[in-house]
Every structure is written in structure tokens, then in C-alpha cells.
Amino acid sequence: MSGNMNLTLKVWRQKNNNAEGKLVNYQVKDISPDMSFLEMMDVLNEQLIVKGDEPIAFDHDCREGICGMCSLYINGRPHGPKDRVTTCQLHMRSFEDGQTITIEPWRAAPFPIVKDLAVNRSAFDRIIASGGYVSVNTGNAQDANSLPIGKEDADLSFAAAACIGCGACVAACKNASAMLFVSAKVSQLALLPQGQPERYLRVHNMVAKMDEEGFGNCTNTGACEAECPKGISLSNIARMNRDYFVAGFASDN
Amino acid sequence: MGITGLFLISFLMVHCFLNSLIFINDGGETFNLGAEFMAKNWLIRAMEIVLFGGLLWHIIQAAILTRENKKARPVAYAASNPSANSKWYSRSMGLLGTILLIFLIIHLRHFWVVSRFTDEITSGRETLFNEMKEVFSQLWVVILYCLAMVSLGYHLLHGFKSAFQTLGWNHVKYNAIIEKTGVIISIVLPVLFAAMPIAIYMGLIK
Image (cartoon, rainbow over all chains, first blue to last red; front, side, top):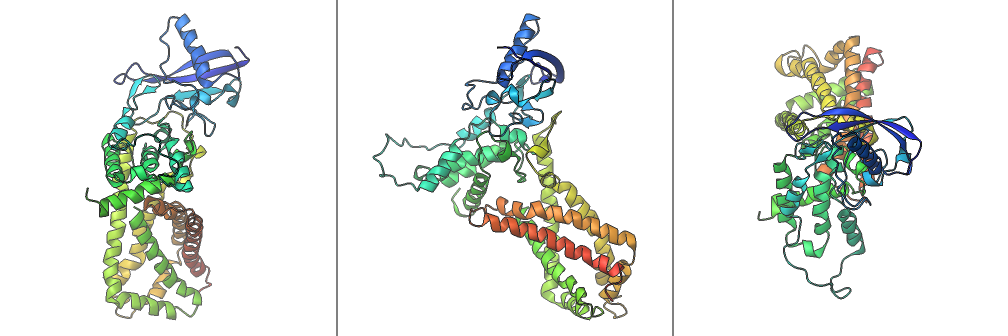
């Protein structure tokens, strides 16, 4: 696949977490507008390998927008200039021939750089491990309607569960806050009957873990919601705040 | 920040209402009556302490949060396009607040210090209304107050609805009301406040 786009890329190169990093300029030629952004990165890496240079490390896995592995802060926005897409689903037709594209890793203290554009997002895993689950086995699928759940709540829970944990919310936030991610993980269970027994303990522990990991605070700028590839709503943050107040005032923990 | 913010807004509303009494244009008679009530009522005096406490707590919280937030992103982005995802004033609350704090220090010196720590007004030699006319006869003061009110408007435009979000008061039925109330408050309060020095400077208030 080749095309007619020539681009200048400014890519963040950093050997490891302790090394100094810097932006390095690269030229790519004959890029097809139908390539995905990551395919364009693959082309650049093949060029680098042929030249005997170290290829650029970046995270990716499913390349169909559902795994949450790809990242990249492209021209000042997480997942690039399009709304509601991940970097792997971003195509080169969203850019112009001759354009300069700056590519940086997610910037947040709790997301240390592994190499180049790849960051370690294990802080999210540790937040989930602190309470983002239901402790009991809920068994096989029940007979229909044996567990009545309101349609609105089911929809809201499902919308919250659409979070793929990519970390774009943290990357977009001026405070590097993880409130949108944590609130989605709190909300998806808080809205369902199976999540009720541990509801307040869960929010308490997950928020405590989020703070411990060193994420910033929410100042309600709304950047996370605007940049989230899955359109996770700010109303989840309000729900989490509500539950957190209840946990603080009225629960035993 | 939400609770202290809403508390400070409630003060602004009372302050704005009482000061708007000058627009009756009766030579400050009603306004001075209101000022005297506020000066002599023990409940108001007690609330003054709570108010300063609330303001101080609002500032301390902001300082702590800002420090933590800076720590959460030690390396800044080389290329950033924040206007693509958020409003400038929502990201500039610290700057807007600092402008307001500087204004507030000057403002307190103009009126609060005079009425509380000198006997100018208590002795009856001077009224708060005359004090106002004197202060607002200076052009730089009028300009400073107007600029501060622009800051206040944007600070409230984000602050009001943000407070409700922080407190978890978010519901499809009420979100529109909260949003609209926030916009109205952040226009009406600063405009009325700014109109006072302008009107006095222009000689519209006798």
C-alpha cells in the first residue's frame, strides 16, 4: 500500500525510564491516506530497521479500537485529532500532505515511560485490583427477569463498561487525573444489583488507591470526556463523588 | 472547593443585593441604612468570621490541589492543544482566582478597613456611601474594579456548575437548570458590581 502523502514526524525517543528523552525528526514518504496511523508508524519503523536504527517502541494490540492498548499524544491531543476514535482507528486521511505531526507518550507521573512512546499503565490495574470487581461468583446466566434491572440503569452501566482503560482521560487532563477511568469502573458495578453489597467499600478503596498512585485531582474541565474514545460521560464522575460522600458519611469503612 | 465556592457565591449575592441599593439614587439613604444594619447585627458580625474562614479555606484547598496536580505531570507536553477539549477559563481558575485575590486586598483596604478599623463611619463623620463616591472618583480604581469583575464572571462561569459536579449533584432533570443558573449568575453579579463604580464615576448616582 503506497500513496502520495509526505510527512514530517517529531517523535519522542527515550531509551528507558531513567534516560533523558527528546523529540527526533523523521521524514516518511508515499504514505497512503487509507493507512491507519499505526500502519504509518510501521512504515517508519521498517525504514529505521533497514537503516540499522532502533525502531520506535509504541503500544498496540487489537488494532480494532477495543483493547485499549494503543495510546499516543498526537499534535497535542490523545488519540489524535478525531473524536471518539483510538489511535489504531485513526487514518492518515485525517492529516494533510506535508503536515508536521508531533507524537508524544502519555504524560503522567503514575504512567512511567517504558521506552519511547510506550508507558506503563499498571497503575490502572492496581486501581481495579483495589475494588473494581464483585467478590462472589455470580454463577451462570439467570432466567430472563429473575434479576430485574431497569432499562435506564442497564444502559448506563453498559455505557460505563465501554471504558477500555486506555488512559486518554489522564493524558488529556491538565491535572493528569484518573477520575473518568475510576468513575467508569465504579459506576458499571454501582448501577447493577450484583455490585450493591460492596458498593461503598469499592468506591472508598478505589479512590484511595487512585490518590496513592499519584494521579491529579479533578477540576471539571471536561477534557477527559471530550477526548475519551468511548465517550464515557462526566456524569459517572458525579455518581462516583456522590457514592464517595455516602461512603465517607454513612458506611462503616 | 465546591462547598466553599458555593458559600462564597451566596455571600456575593447578599453583597450585590445590598450594594445595588445605591441604584435607588436617594443620596445613599437606603444604602447607608443597609450598611448600618450589616455593621451592627451580631449574626452578620459572626458570619463575617465564617466568611473569612471560607475564603481562606477555598484558597488553601486551591493551593494544595494545584501542588498535587503539578506533581502528577512532571514532564509537560511539547505540543498541546487544550482548546480542542476544554474551555480556557475552566483551565485558568488559578489565574482568575489570583487576580480576584489581588483585587480583594485592594477592595478590602478601600472599604472594609475604613469601616472596621477606623472610627470614620462609626463616629458618624463619614458614611459608607460617601466613602464609595470618593473611592470611585479615581479612574484607575474604576478600571481595576471592572477588570476584576471580568475575572469574576469567568471564575463563576466555570465555578458554579463545577461545584455541583464535584458534590455529585448531577441529574438529567436538573443539569440544564444548574447550567443556566450558572450563566445568569456569572453575568448578573459582575455586571451589577461593575455598574456601581462606573455609575458613580460618571456622576449618575447623586
